[in-house]
Amino acid sequence: MATRCPATDKPPSESCIGTNGWHAVLPSPKSFSRLEGSQTADWLVIGGGYSGLAAARRLAETVPSDRIVVLEALRIGDGPAGRSSGFMIDLPHKLDSDSYTGSVEADRRQTIRNRLAIDFVRRVIDEDGLDPAIQYRTGKVNAAATEHGDTLLAAYRNHLDALSEPYETLGADEMLALTGSRYYRSGILTPQSALLHPAAYLCDLAEALSRRGVVIHENSAVTQFTEGPPHVVRTEHGQLTVPKVILAVNGAVAAFGHFKRRLMDVFTFASLTRALTEEETKSLGGEPFWGVLPADPMGTTLRRLSGPVYGGTRVLVRNRFILGSKGSAFEGRPINVITRQQRESFDNRYPALAHVPMDYVWGGRLCLSKNGATAFGEVAPGVFSAACQNGLGSVNGTLHGLLAADMATRRNCHAGLIAELTAADPPVRIPPEPITRRVGNWVIRRRETRAGMER
Image (cartoon, rainbow, N blue to C red):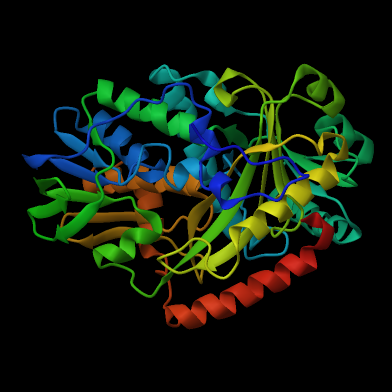
């Protein structure tokens, strides 16, 4: 049983940190055995997140008679993918920009790719009989709490006009009707994004894959990888020999000898309230299910969750970024400080719920490259990388896993997208880790300060 964080009249302790709330609220996620003994397979997918399970699902469709194995270092749904905020954003969403925007033509291409991933997840949910409540096609709102935020939303609105994308402008009263909070001045609703329960999706998809004959091993971290072919993978308790491997490990791909000194580990943090009582839910007001992104990328993300798969009615708060080393998510900033800051962000928006404790507080890892490039392609004979999702693991990870499987099977599916990704510039080199971490965290702190009350 996870330790609950204390209410606001007591400082949070580190004992309440680290439990992934998404995974903890699931009633009974299926367990999979660890890899043991010496085995062989036709395909190995390393990583059981968005990329890895999308790749395995695609392989199960295209080479159903082959033996497909997935190795996950942790529990399915409890790794970085299952710790995300669960937005499947159809439009471009660049964390290193002021208003998530880039060039018009590049963003149009990215929108097509993002929507392909969203549609793939919906198809998997329908075909494999997953709980439909895992994904809601409700759209998402970019919200402003300050004049600075309004300025950023105006730039975002102009970019949407250039893209010919539909949107709805929301005023303060409409934001109150949606969120139950008077904190926001304005918002922009874009209707085609989806909201996902990340851990439930990954756990249910893994169970569906096992019914299709895919062999899944969790708690099976790779300790040694010898490239062939055949490739030999060792874990603490087992060994697997296989001709083709898909590396769906995001920033950990460097540990397999590829894209070294080109990827950055960034940690972000989330808090999830306990289930609200009927009286608290009535006090909260607003709509039962929505997702709000900040106008400033360094601001606070909010989601309201309702239904059995979410353990009742809860509110999720996500903010704060740390550019970390490979060893620690919390280096340079005590986690209890971040927890208090998230508590403050929640209380600013919902002062009437300041007494409601946070059930779970956790951190999650995402991977960025300096130039926004992905680590995709055949990196060695029979070894395919679907890594570095640049903060959009749900859509980029799903798509890259799907495309890596198509590339590895040499089928003429999505050939144009595969050619586009393989022809793109790779991640550029970055300075040594201490320099990158020090400078990167200085930039992050500066941008978070500029975000002000958007955070």
